[in-house]
Length: 522
Image 1 (cartoon, rainbow, N blue to C red):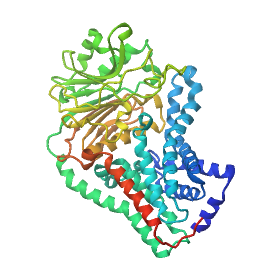
Image 2: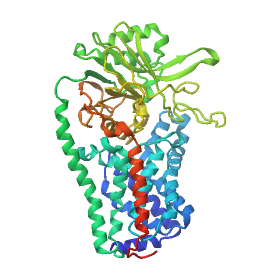
Image 3: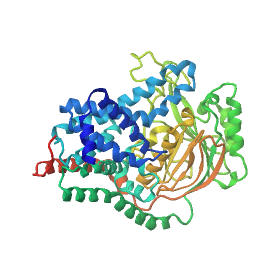
Image 4: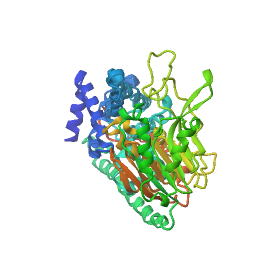
Protein backbone atom coordinates (compact mmCIF):
# COMPACT_ATOMS: atom_id res chain seq x y z
CA UNK A 1 0.00 0.00 0.00
CA UNK A 2 2.79 2.44 0.92
CA UNK A 3 4.48 1.72 -2.39
CA UNK A 4 1.29 2.44 -4.36
CA UNK A 5 0.81 5.75 -2.56
CA UNK A 6 4.45 6.68 -3.16
CA UNK A 7 4.13 5.86 -6.87
CA UNK A 8 1.03 8.05 -7.24
CA UNK A 9 2.64 10.95 -5.39
CA UNK A 10 5.74 10.76 -7.58
CA UNK A 11 3.58 10.62 -10.71
CA UNK A 12 1.86 13.95 -9.96
CA UNK A 13 2.72 16.79 -12.29
CA UNK A 14 1.87 20.41 -12.97
CA UNK A 15 -0.54 22.28 -10.73
CA UNK A 16 -1.64 19.07 -9.01
CA UNK A 17 1.87 18.41 -7.78
CA UNK A 18 2.32 22.01 -6.62
CA UNK A 19 -1.06 22.00 -4.89
CA UNK A 20 -0.36 18.77 -3.02
CA UNK A 21 3.00 20.08 -1.78
CA UNK A 22 1.49 23.40 -0.67
CA UNK A 23 -1.37 21.69 1.17
CA UNK A 24 1.06 19.24 2.77
CA UNK A 25 2.95 22.20 4.21
CA UNK A 26 -0.26 23.74 5.55
CA UNK A 27 -1.24 20.45 7.18
CA UNK A 28 2.20 20.10 8.74
CA UNK A 29 1.57 23.27 10.77
CA UNK A 30 -1.28 21.47 12.55
CA UNK A 31 1.34 19.58 14.56
CA UNK A 32 2.36 22.79 16.35
CA UNK A 33 0.86 24.45 19.43
CA UNK A 34 -1.95 24.79 20.31
CA UNK A 35 -3.40 22.09 18.02
CA UNK A 36 -0.78 19.30 18.35
CA UNK A 37 -2.02 16.94 15.61
CA UNK A 38 1.43 15.36 15.54
CA UNK A 39 0.52 12.19 13.54
CA UNK A 40 -0.10 14.39 10.48
CA UNK A 41 3.69 14.62 10.16
CA UNK A 42 3.82 10.89 9.35
CA UNK A 43 1.96 11.75 6.15
CA UNK A 44 3.52 15.11 5.34
CA UNK A 45 7.20 14.21 5.46
CA UNK A 46 6.96 11.02 3.39
CA UNK A 47 5.11 13.03 0.75
CA UNK A 48 7.93 15.56 0.76
CA UNK A 49 10.49 12.77 0.30
CA UNK A 50 8.59 11.18 -2.59
CA UNK A 51 8.34 14.51 -4.38
CA UNK A 52 12.04 15.08 -3.72
CA UNK A 53 12.70 11.80 -5.54
CA UNK A 54 11.45 13.26 -8.84
CA UNK A 55 13.00 16.74 -8.60
CA UNK A 56 15.52 17.66 -11.26
CA UNK A 57 18.69 18.97 -9.72
CA UNK A 58 19.10 21.56 -7.02
CA UNK A 59 16.72 24.04 -8.67
CA UNK A 60 13.85 21.57 -8.48
CA UNK A 61 14.68 20.80 -4.85
CA UNK A 62 14.81 24.53 -4.07
CA UNK A 63 11.36 25.04 -5.58
CA UNK A 64 9.96 22.02 -3.73
CA UNK A 65 11.32 23.23 -0.39
CA UNK A 66 10.06 26.76 -0.95
CA UNK A 67 6.55 25.68 -1.92
CA UNK A 68 6.31 23.31 1.05
CA UNK A 69 7.70 26.02 3.33
CA UNK A 70 5.21 28.55 1.99
CA UNK A 71 2.33 26.35 3.10
CA UNK A 72 3.96 25.33 6.37
CA UNK A 73 4.80 28.86 7.47
CA UNK A 74 1.45 30.30 6.38
CA UNK A 75 -0.14 27.75 8.68
CA UNK A 76 2.32 28.54 11.47
CA UNK A 77 2.45 32.36 11.32
CA UNK A 78 -0.93 33.36 9.89
CA UNK A 79 -1.57 35.17 13.18
CA UNK A 80 0.70 38.05 12.06
CA UNK A 81 -2.23 39.25 9.97
CA UNK A 82 -4.17 40.06 13.14
CA UNK A 83 -1.72 42.90 13.87
CA UNK A 84 -2.85 44.62 10.66
CA UNK A 85 -6.44 44.71 11.94
CA UNK A 86 -5.67 46.79 15.04
CA UNK A 87 -5.57 49.90 12.82
CA UNK A 88 -7.45 48.45 9.87
CA UNK A 89 -7.92 51.78 8.11
CA UNK A 90 -4.16 52.29 7.86
CA UNK A 91 -2.73 48.78 7.68
CA UNK A 92 -5.62 46.50 6.72
CA UNK A 93 -4.49 46.34 3.10
CA UNK A 94 -1.21 44.79 4.29
CA UNK A 95 -2.89 41.71 5.82
CA UNK A 96 -2.48 39.31 2.86
CA UNK A 97 0.98 40.70 2.14
CA UNK A 98 2.06 40.17 5.75
CA UNK A 99 0.77 36.60 5.96
CA UNK A 100 1.95 35.40 2.54
CA UNK A 101 5.06 37.58 2.44
CA UNK A 102 6.44 36.37 5.77
CA UNK A 103 5.73 32.75 4.81
CA UNK A 104 7.43 33.26 1.44
CA UNK A 105 10.56 34.58 3.14
CA UNK A 106 10.64 31.83 5.76
CA UNK A 107 10.12 29.26 3.00
CA UNK A 108 13.60 30.10 1.76
CA UNK A 109 15.14 28.17 4.65
CA UNK A 110 13.85 24.68 3.77
CA UNK A 111 14.34 25.61 0.10
CA UNK A 112 18.05 26.25 0.60
CA UNK A 113 18.72 23.16 2.68
CA UNK A 114 16.85 20.83 0.29
CA UNK A 115 18.82 22.33 -2.58
CA UNK A 116 22.05 21.65 -0.68
CA UNK A 117 21.29 17.97 -0.07
CA UNK A 118 19.89 17.29 -3.56
CA UNK A 119 23.29 16.43 -5.09
CA UNK A 120 23.68 13.79 -2.35
CA UNK A 121 20.18 12.35 -2.88
CA UNK A 122 19.61 8.85 -4.28
CA UNK A 123 15.93 8.49 -5.11
CA UNK A 124 14.41 5.37 -3.60
CA UNK A 125 17.30 4.65 -1.26
CA UNK A 126 16.27 4.16 2.41
CA UNK A 127 19.11 6.36 3.70
CA UNK A 128 17.57 9.45 2.08
CA UNK A 129 15.36 9.54 5.17
CA UNK A 130 18.45 10.67 7.07
CA UNK A 131 19.21 13.36 4.50
CA UNK A 132 15.69 14.81 4.73
CA UNK A 133 15.80 14.92 8.54
CA UNK A 134 19.25 16.54 8.49
CA UNK A 135 18.12 19.10 5.92
CA UNK A 136 15.14 20.08 8.07
CA UNK A 137 17.29 20.31 11.20
CA UNK A 138 19.89 22.52 9.50
CA UNK A 139 17.14 24.68 8.00
CA UNK A 140 15.71 25.41 11.44
CA UNK A 141 19.16 26.29 12.75
CA UNK A 142 19.74 28.74 9.88
CA UNK A 143 16.31 30.23 10.66
CA UNK A 144 17.57 31.20 14.15
CA UNK A 145 19.99 33.75 12.65
CA UNK A 146 19.39 34.12 8.89
CA UNK A 147 17.76 37.39 7.76
CA UNK A 148 17.87 38.70 11.38
CA UNK A 149 16.42 35.38 12.60
CA UNK A 150 12.88 34.20 13.26
CA UNK A 151 12.96 30.75 14.92
CA UNK A 152 9.26 30.81 15.76
CA UNK A 153 7.76 27.49 16.88
CA UNK A 154 10.32 24.94 15.62
CA UNK A 155 8.98 21.51 14.69
CA UNK A 156 10.20 20.03 17.98
CA UNK A 157 7.49 21.96 19.80
CA UNK A 158 4.97 19.35 18.70
CA UNK A 159 6.09 17.48 21.86
CA UNK A 160 5.01 20.22 24.31
CA UNK A 161 2.27 18.03 25.88
CA UNK A 162 4.89 15.40 26.86
CA UNK A 163 6.87 16.53 29.92
CA UNK A 164 9.28 13.61 29.68
CA UNK A 165 10.29 14.14 26.06
CA UNK A 166 10.62 17.89 26.68
CA UNK A 167 13.43 17.27 29.17
CA UNK A 168 15.72 16.32 26.28
CA UNK A 169 15.72 20.03 25.36
CA UNK A 170 18.03 20.48 28.36
CA UNK A 171 20.55 18.32 26.47
CA UNK A 172 20.25 19.33 22.81
CA UNK A 173 17.63 22.08 22.72
CA UNK A 174 14.43 22.43 20.74
CA UNK A 175 16.39 22.19 17.48
CA UNK A 176 17.59 18.75 18.53
CA UNK A 177 13.97 17.83 19.17
CA UNK A 178 13.11 19.11 15.70
CA UNK A 179 15.78 16.90 14.18
CA UNK A 180 14.45 13.86 16.03
CA UNK A 181 10.88 14.76 15.05
CA UNK A 182 11.76 15.01 11.36
CA UNK A 183 13.54 11.66 11.57
CA UNK A 184 10.50 9.98 13.11
CA UNK A 185 8.13 11.70 10.67
CA UNK A 186 10.08 10.31 7.70
CA UNK A 187 9.90 6.73 9.03
CA UNK A 188 6.86 5.52 6.99
CA UNK A 189 8.98 5.81 3.84
CA UNK A 190 10.93 2.80 5.14
CA UNK A 191 7.85 0.63 4.65
CA UNK A 192 8.00 0.83 0.86
CA UNK A 193 7.92 -2.65 -0.57
CA UNK A 194 11.01 -1.93 -2.66
CA UNK A 195 13.17 -2.22 0.45
CA UNK A 196 14.45 -5.28 2.19
CA UNK A 197 11.80 -6.15 4.78
CA UNK A 198 14.47 -6.87 7.37
CA UNK A 199 16.23 -3.54 6.83
CA UNK A 200 12.95 -1.63 6.67
CA UNK A 201 11.60 -2.96 9.93
CA UNK A 202 14.97 -2.59 11.67
CA UNK A 203 15.23 1.07 10.68
CA UNK A 204 11.57 1.69 11.47
CA UNK A 205 11.78 0.21 14.96
CA UNK A 206 14.99 2.10 15.65
CA UNK A 207 13.44 5.40 14.52
CA UNK A 208 10.18 5.03 16.44
CA UNK A 209 12.11 3.95 19.53
CA UNK A 210 13.66 7.42 19.81
CA UNK A 211 10.68 9.26 21.34
CA UNK A 212 9.99 6.36 23.68
CA UNK A 213 13.59 6.39 24.87
CA UNK A 214 13.54 10.17 25.35
CA UNK A 215 10.28 9.97 27.31
CA UNK A 216 11.79 7.38 29.62
CA UNK A 217 15.01 9.32 30.16
CA UNK A 218 13.02 12.51 30.66
CA UNK A 219 10.85 10.95 33.34
CA UNK A 220 14.01 9.87 35.14
CA UNK A 221 15.28 13.45 34.98
CA UNK A 222 12.00 14.77 36.34
CA UNK A 223 12.04 12.31 39.21
CA UNK A 224 15.64 13.22 40.08
CA UNK A 225 15.22 17.01 39.92
CA UNK A 226 11.72 17.62 41.23
CA UNK A 227 13.06 17.18 44.75
CA UNK A 228 15.35 20.19 44.22
CA UNK A 229 12.33 22.48 43.88
CA UNK A 230 11.45 22.11 47.55
CA UNK A 231 12.47 24.62 50.20
CA UNK A 232 12.35 28.39 49.98
CA UNK A 233 11.46 29.89 46.60
CA UNK A 234 13.81 32.15 44.69
CA UNK A 235 11.35 35.05 45.06
CA UNK A 236 7.62 35.78 45.05
CA UNK A 237 6.06 37.78 42.25
CA UNK A 238 2.72 39.43 41.54
CA UNK A 239 1.80 39.27 37.85
CA UNK A 240 -0.65 41.95 36.72
CA UNK A 241 -2.72 41.32 33.59
CA UNK A 242 -5.40 43.99 32.99
CA UNK A 243 -6.32 42.61 29.55
CA UNK A 244 -6.54 46.03 27.90
CA UNK A 245 -7.36 45.64 24.18
CA UNK A 246 -4.68 46.87 21.82
CA UNK A 247 -7.09 49.40 20.32
CA UNK A 248 -7.41 51.03 23.78
CA UNK A 249 -3.81 50.75 24.86
CA UNK A 250 -2.53 53.84 23.02
CA UNK A 251 -5.76 55.82 23.02
CA UNK A 252 -4.72 59.17 24.54
CA UNK A 253 -8.09 59.59 26.22
CA UNK A 254 -7.71 56.25 28.00
CA UNK A 255 -4.01 56.25 28.93
CA UNK A 256 -4.41 57.76 32.40
CA UNK A 257 -7.31 55.46 33.23
CA UNK A 258 -5.37 52.43 32.01
CA UNK A 259 -2.43 53.36 34.22
CA UNK A 260 -4.69 53.82 37.26
CA UNK A 261 -6.13 50.38 36.52
CA UNK A 262 -2.65 48.83 36.64
CA UNK A 263 -1.92 50.57 39.94
CA UNK A 264 -5.25 49.57 41.50
CA UNK A 265 -4.80 45.91 40.51
CA UNK A 266 -1.25 45.94 41.88
CA UNK A 267 -2.46 47.26 45.24
CA UNK A 268 -5.00 44.50 45.83
CA UNK A 269 -4.66 42.63 49.16
CA UNK A 270 -1.48 40.60 49.59
CA UNK A 271 0.90 43.20 48.12
CA UNK A 272 3.00 43.07 51.29
CA UNK A 273 3.70 39.37 50.70
CA UNK A 274 5.46 39.70 47.33
CA UNK A 275 8.95 40.81 46.36
CA UNK A 276 8.19 42.07 42.88
CA UNK A 277 5.18 43.37 40.97
CA UNK A 278 5.53 42.77 37.23
CA UNK A 279 3.65 44.50 34.43
CA UNK A 280 3.83 43.73 30.71
CA UNK A 281 5.64 45.25 27.74
CA UNK A 282 5.00 49.03 27.40
CA UNK A 283 2.38 48.76 30.13
CA UNK A 284 3.25 52.37 30.94
CA UNK A 285 2.76 54.50 27.79
CA UNK A 286 5.00 57.30 29.07
CA UNK A 287 8.76 57.84 29.09
CA UNK A 288 9.24 57.07 32.78
CA UNK A 289 12.77 58.42 33.01
CA UNK A 290 11.61 61.90 31.93
CA UNK A 291 8.39 62.19 33.95
CA UNK A 292 8.76 62.50 37.74
CA UNK A 293 5.00 62.70 38.27
CA UNK A 294 4.51 59.35 36.53
CA UNK A 295 7.26 57.76 38.64
CA UNK A 296 5.59 59.10 41.79
CA UNK A 297 2.30 57.50 40.75
CA UNK A 298 4.02 54.20 39.98
CA UNK A 299 5.55 54.17 43.47
CA UNK A 300 2.07 53.36 44.80
CA UNK A 301 2.26 49.96 43.05
CA UNK A 302 5.61 48.98 44.59
CA UNK A 303 5.39 46.33 47.32
CA UNK A 304 6.87 47.26 50.73
CA UNK A 305 10.64 46.97 50.43
CA UNK A 306 10.21 45.52 46.96
CA UNK A 307 10.38 46.43 43.28
CA UNK A 308 8.00 47.24 40.44
CA UNK A 309 9.10 46.04 36.99
CA UNK A 310 7.30 47.39 33.97
CA UNK A 311 7.74 47.94 30.29
CA UNK A 312 7.74 51.50 28.96
CA UNK A 313 9.24 53.53 26.10
CA UNK A 314 12.51 55.33 26.77
CA UNK A 315 13.82 58.44 25.06
CA UNK A 316 17.51 59.31 24.93
CA UNK A 317 19.10 62.52 23.66
CA UNK A 318 17.55 65.59 22.11
CA UNK A 319 16.75 66.90 18.66
CA UNK A 320 18.42 65.03 15.82
CA UNK A 321 20.27 62.86 18.34
CA UNK A 322 17.09 61.65 19.98
CA UNK A 323 16.67 57.87 20.10
CA UNK A 324 13.70 55.72 21.16
CA UNK A 325 13.91 52.41 23.00
CA UNK A 326 11.46 49.70 23.97
CA UNK A 327 12.56 49.31 27.57
CA UNK A 328 12.09 47.64 30.92
CA UNK A 329 12.23 49.80 34.05
CA UNK A 330 12.63 48.68 37.66
CA UNK A 331 11.47 51.16 40.33
CA UNK A 332 11.72 51.13 44.11
CA UNK A 333 9.23 52.39 46.71
CA UNK A 334 10.40 56.00 46.33
CA UNK A 335 9.70 55.94 42.59
CA UNK A 336 13.40 55.93 41.71
CA UNK A 337 14.58 53.96 38.68
CA UNK A 338 17.02 51.34 39.94
CA UNK A 339 17.60 49.46 36.66
CA UNK A 340 16.86 49.82 32.95
CA UNK A 341 17.04 47.33 30.11
CA UNK A 342 16.59 48.18 26.42
CA UNK A 343 15.24 45.62 23.99
CA UNK A 344 18.10 44.40 21.80
CA UNK A 345 16.35 42.28 19.15
CA UNK A 346 13.81 44.48 17.40
CA UNK A 347 10.85 43.30 15.30
CA UNK A 348 11.17 44.21 11.59
CA UNK A 349 8.29 46.47 10.49
CA UNK A 350 6.95 46.42 14.05
CA UNK A 351 9.73 48.45 15.71
CA UNK A 352 11.83 49.48 12.74
CA UNK A 353 11.56 49.39 8.96
CA UNK A 354 14.43 47.52 7.26
CA UNK A 355 15.84 49.57 4.39
CA UNK A 356 13.52 52.35 5.53
CA UNK A 357 15.23 54.86 3.25
CA UNK A 358 14.03 52.86 0.26
CA UNK A 359 10.65 51.45 1.40
CA UNK A 360 7.62 53.80 1.53
CA UNK A 361 6.29 52.13 4.70
CA UNK A 362 5.84 53.04 8.35
CA UNK A 363 6.23 50.68 11.28
CA UNK A 364 2.86 49.49 12.59
CA UNK A 365 3.52 50.46 16.23
CA UNK A 366 2.61 53.85 17.66
CA UNK A 367 5.07 56.74 17.44
CA UNK A 368 7.19 58.41 14.82
CA UNK A 369 10.58 57.01 13.97
CA UNK A 370 12.22 53.66 14.48
CA UNK A 371 13.21 52.19 17.81
CA UNK A 372 16.90 51.69 18.49
CA UNK A 373 18.33 48.40 19.78
CA UNK A 374 20.05 48.14 23.13
CA UNK A 375 22.89 45.79 24.06
CA UNK A 376 21.89 42.26 24.94
CA UNK A 377 21.27 39.76 26.18
CA UNK A 378 22.20 41.04 29.62
CA UNK A 379 22.25 39.87 33.21
CA UNK A 380 20.57 42.59 35.23
CA UNK A 381 21.03 43.31 38.93
CA UNK A 382 17.88 44.85 40.41
CA UNK A 383 18.20 45.85 44.05
CA UNK A 384 18.36 42.79 46.29
CA UNK A 385 16.69 40.51 43.74
CA UNK A 386 18.53 37.52 42.27
CA UNK A 387 20.26 38.41 38.97
CA UNK A 388 17.88 38.14 36.03
CA UNK A 389 18.06 37.97 32.24
CA UNK A 390 15.24 40.20 30.92
CA UNK A 391 13.68 39.51 27.52
CA UNK A 392 11.13 41.77 25.87
CA UNK A 393 8.55 40.28 23.53
CA UNK A 394 9.98 37.92 20.93
CA UNK A 395 13.52 38.00 22.30
CA UNK A 396 12.46 34.84 24.13
CA UNK A 397 12.06 32.87 20.87
CA UNK A 398 15.80 32.54 20.18
CA UNK A 399 17.23 29.25 21.54
CA UNK A 400 20.72 29.62 22.95
CA UNK A 401 20.54 33.44 22.89
CA UNK A 402 18.59 34.42 26.02
CA UNK A 403 21.49 34.62 28.47
CA UNK A 404 24.69 36.68 28.30
CA UNK A 405 27.48 34.07 28.13
CA UNK A 406 30.10 36.56 29.30
CA UNK A 407 28.31 37.76 32.44
CA UNK A 408 27.27 36.26 35.74
CA UNK A 409 24.78 33.48 35.17
CA UNK A 410 21.23 34.73 35.97
CA UNK A 411 19.00 32.79 38.33
CA UNK A 412 15.78 33.48 36.43
CA UNK A 413 14.43 34.71 33.11
CA UNK A 414 11.86 37.51 32.79
CA UNK A 415 9.74 37.94 29.65
CA UNK A 416 7.57 41.03 29.28
CA UNK A 417 5.41 40.97 26.17
CA UNK A 418 2.33 42.42 24.54
CA UNK A 419 0.49 39.81 22.49
CA UNK A 420 -2.60 41.99 22.30
CA UNK A 421 -1.66 42.67 18.69
CA UNK A 422 -2.63 39.10 17.78
CA UNK A 423 -6.07 38.81 19.34
CA UNK A 424 -7.33 35.28 20.00
CA UNK A 425 -5.19 33.69 17.30
CA UNK A 426 -2.69 30.85 17.77
CA UNK A 427 0.16 33.36 18.19
CA UNK A 428 -0.14 34.04 21.95
CA UNK A 429 -0.47 30.32 22.70
CA UNK A 430 2.62 29.50 20.68
CA UNK A 431 4.53 32.38 22.27
CA UNK A 432 3.88 31.07 25.77
CA UNK A 433 4.96 27.53 24.85
CA UNK A 434 8.16 28.93 23.33
CA UNK A 435 8.92 30.58 26.68
CA UNK A 436 8.40 27.20 28.38
CA UNK A 437 11.00 25.69 26.09
CA UNK A 438 13.60 28.32 27.05
CA UNK A 439 13.14 27.46 30.73
CA UNK A 440 13.90 23.78 30.10
CA UNK A 441 16.85 24.49 27.82
CA UNK A 442 18.52 26.85 30.27
CA UNK A 443 17.46 25.16 33.50
CA UNK A 444 16.11 28.50 34.72
CA UNK A 445 12.61 29.48 35.86
CA UNK A 446 10.88 32.05 33.69
CA UNK A 447 8.39 34.71 34.71
CA UNK A 448 6.20 35.81 31.82
CA UNK A 449 3.75 38.71 31.83
CA UNK A 450 1.61 39.66 28.83
CA UNK A 451 -0.78 42.58 28.76
CA UNK A 452 -3.64 40.42 27.45
CA UNK A 453 -2.20 36.99 28.31
CA UNK A 454 -0.84 34.44 28.61
CA UNK A 455 0.96 35.17 31.92
CA UNK A 456 2.49 32.75 34.40
CA UNK A 457 5.59 31.27 35.98
CA UNK A 458 7.36 28.27 34.44
CA UNK A 459 9.70 26.07 36.48
CA UNK A 460 13.17 25.14 35.15
CA UNK A 461 11.63 21.76 34.26
CA UNK A 462 8.96 23.39 32.13
CA UNK A 463 6.10 22.88 34.57
CA UNK A 464 3.36 25.48 35.04
CA UNK A 465 1.52 25.84 38.34
CA UNK A 466 -1.00 28.57 37.40
CA UNK A 467 -1.83 30.83 34.46
CA UNK A 468 -3.75 33.93 33.55
CA UNK A 469 -5.30 32.89 30.27
CA UNK A 470 -5.77 34.88 27.10
CA UNK A 471 -7.93 37.98 27.71
CA UNK A 472 -8.39 37.01 31.35
CA UNK A 473 -8.18 39.99 33.71
CA UNK A 474 -6.54 39.47 37.09
CA UNK A 475 -3.43 39.11 39.21
CA UNK A 476 -1.40 36.08 40.19
CA UNK A 477 0.84 35.86 43.25
CA UNK A 478 3.30 33.05 42.57
CA UNK A 479 6.49 31.68 44.02
CA UNK A 480 9.36 31.43 41.54
CA UNK A 481 11.28 28.17 41.99
CA UNK A 482 15.05 28.09 42.11
CA UNK A 483 17.08 27.13 39.01
CA UNK A 484 18.46 23.61 38.66
CA UNK A 485 21.65 23.24 40.67
CA UNK A 486 23.86 22.20 37.78
CA UNK A 487 23.79 23.97 34.43
CA UNK A 488 22.15 22.07 31.60
CA UNK A 489 24.23 20.67 28.76
CA UNK A 490 22.41 22.94 26.32
CA UNK A 491 23.17 26.06 28.39
CA UNK A 492 26.87 25.23 28.06
CA UNK A 493 27.06 24.36 24.36
CA UNK A 494 23.90 25.82 22.84
CA UNK A 495 22.93 25.07 19.26
CA UNK A 496 26.31 23.53 18.45
CA UNK A 497 24.88 20.19 19.62
CA UNK A 498 21.89 19.92 17.23
CA UNK A 499 23.98 21.27 14.35
CA UNK A 500 26.65 18.62 14.92
CA UNK A 501 23.95 15.94 15.17
CA UNK A 502 22.45 17.12 11.87
CA UNK A 503 25.81 17.00 10.12
CA UNK A 504 26.57 13.53 11.51
CA UNK A 505 23.19 12.20 10.37
CA UNK A 506 23.69 13.74 6.95
CA UNK A 507 27.17 12.18 6.65
CA UNK A 508 25.82 8.81 7.81
CA UNK A 509 23.08 9.02 5.18
CA UNK A 510 25.66 9.66 2.45
CA UNK A 511 27.77 6.76 3.71
CA UNK A 512 24.83 4.35 3.67
CA UNK A 513 23.84 5.41 0.18
CA UNK A 514 27.24 4.31 -1.10
CA UNK A 515 26.67 0.80 0.21
CA UNK A 516 24.99 -1.83 -1.94
CA UNK A 517 21.41 -1.97 -0.73
CA UNK A 518 18.42 -3.42 -2.54
CA UNK A 519 16.15 -0.57 -3.58
CA UNK A 520 14.24 0.61 -6.62
CA UNK A 521 15.86 3.50 -8.46
CA UNK A 522 13.31 6.13 -9.40
